[in-house]
Amino acid sequence: MPETPLLDLSDVSVRYPGRRRLRSTPALSEVSLDVLPGETVGLVGESGSGKTTLGKAVLGLVPVGQGSIRLDGRDITAASGRKRRELSRLIQVVFQNPYLSFNPGRTIGQTVAETVTVLRGMKAPQVRARVAEMLEAVGLDGTAAARYPAQFSGGQLQRIAIARALMPAPRLLICDEAVSALDLSVQAQVLNLLADLRERHGLAYLFITHDLAVVRHIADRVVVLRQGRVVESGTAAQVCEAPRHPYTQALLAAAPVADPAEQARRREIRRRLRAGGAPAPTPETHAERAMP
Image (cartoon, rainbow, N blue to C red):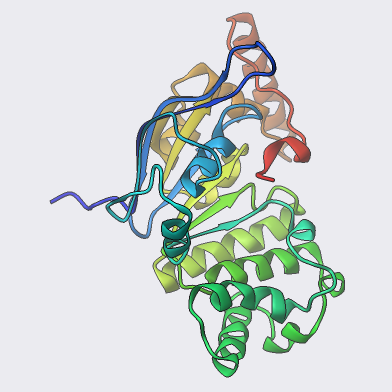
């Protein structure tokens, strides 16, 4: 029998209300995708493609106008606040900017402990032990709990953000541009950490990004969004090495590479795509990409 998806979106549509008398704006149009237990699905698109809106819909941060969202077999499309809190045990999120993820006046231990304090009602000694365990799981010493965010680098803070997300032992992590604010060398370290945690904890990831090179490194399958619609999906190898849709080809050709010969080849691809009328990806900024 086919494996039951951990996350299943079926024909999901989301519209943002227009200002004054303007009509509402479609952000997602009949989007369907699923994430199996232990699988990593990359959700790729430029700014305005709808990828972050999809993540918000899964988290209940925007209303779904049409379609359904199921988590572990349960319909969460219009889940109440109480049900959402219960489901937080299964699903957590890692945001883009680690510097904005922490209260500078609270220790790392206090911040990381918040999740289990709210969700599981653990006693103080258990919480401290869990915090130390999760910090060590992401490659940091347990004594880091006594320090403050300003004492860590961006890469270390993102590791701590991952540790915080792991505290309630979720089954699914939504990573919204989780490495895009990091240097390339640090990106690789965090991606390797996520892959290792997936193996050790059986995690599934919905990995939201604008960068096909990143999803090629970490994803099993890739879904490409453009203007709120799925334009291509398949295995990471299929989509990243032999993209069929002109938009996916343009995204791949726009990705920076260190090899001058490859740069020249991609410039030629972009030129041909523009000549053929293919959509050109819009340049992204950090402010446009991630969930608030």
